[in-house]
Image (cartoon, rainbow, N blue to C red; front, side):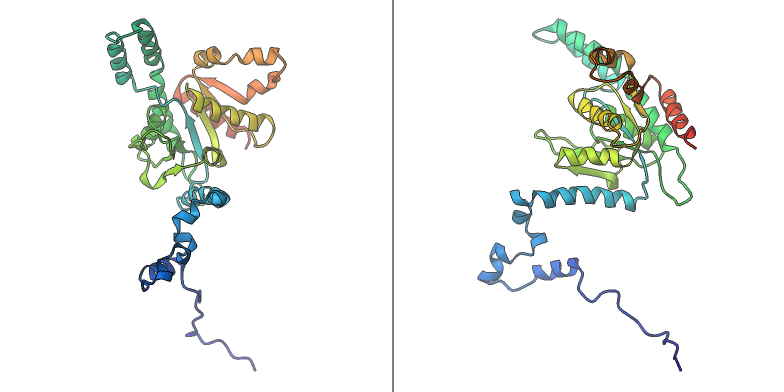
Length: 297
């Protein structure tokens, strides 16, 4: 005759100590010539070991895994990624740069011309900020997952505007920063618990796109081009499913990239130009994103 298990029986969830427990214990051990030698350090506490050249594959894994865990724990299912220059300030600051240019030494004419161009593009700071507000208002799904969470490179200017828009609306946003030779810090509008720093550009770009379900590219330089054209290539080659790709500033993009010439030269097809959509206002861009997914219901 079988017996029912006793309700007071307790089976432990683990029998080995947690890594944190052993790590703390390792700090309190006795000091001997053996324990003081680097060879005795726990591998995951040994920075000299972790930073060895031949540990690069492990660092790749860690840099891939940590941001993923952070976003999973934050219930982030998808993001709205915003790329753009770190040199386009908000309108008031752009005007101040123009005032300074009028008193510049050296080639004053060129300094004024560049400053005037920045003033003309500074309107996109406000557009990115408004777009951040619109995207952040998207409701959570039935499982409590968050969608179209604003994600930027975490830096100043256009990136700052995107995060600022989310903060305006009372919502969290992501900043994916990168270690660079010159000092920089995340802009103050990135949610601290979602502010992440990368060593490897490749891993950072992967995290931009893993959760991206919409992307806006504002006027920018080499970094913006690098990130944007990688996405266009992934969609063109079918490596990822299409997502809405918004190019803000038709005049800028058509001036710096002759897309029609690429078609005429036969190096891309005419249909490849349908991967992206030129837009100007925040609402226009948000409408494109909503229509894209509404048509797929």
